[in-house]
Image (cartoon, rainbow, N blue to C red):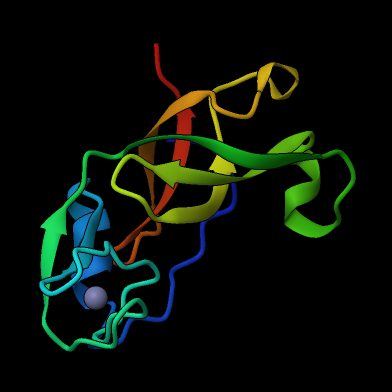
Length: 135
Ligand SMILES: [Zn+2]
C-alpha cells in the first residue's frame, strides 16, 4: 500500500464489478465474448465491435510500462509525494491503464519495465490500482 492520496471513485452499475474486484485485491474487467477484447474502462458495450456480449474476467495484474512521466512539482495534497510517477501500464491481457508507479525510485523507471498491481484502499469498498516493479 502506498501513501499516495486515494479518493473513492464514483461507482455505477457498469463499473461496480470492477470496483468490487479492487476491494478484493483482484483486477477484474469485462471481456468481449465475440472479439475477445479485454475492455478498459469497464463498460457494457465492446468498443472494438459494439457487441453487448461481455463476461467479467479476472486478470493477472501483470503488465509493463508503456509510457510514463515523473512529476516533480505539484500542488495541494500531492505536493509532499513528489517526485511521483504517472504512467500508462499495458496489462498482459491488452488494456492500458493510466496509473501511478509506486515502491520504486522514479529515476529507475523505464519503458517496458515489468510491473504488477498493488491496491490502495479508499476506505469505501473500493481500492485504487497502482503498479510496482516486479522482479
Ligand atoms: Zn468485441
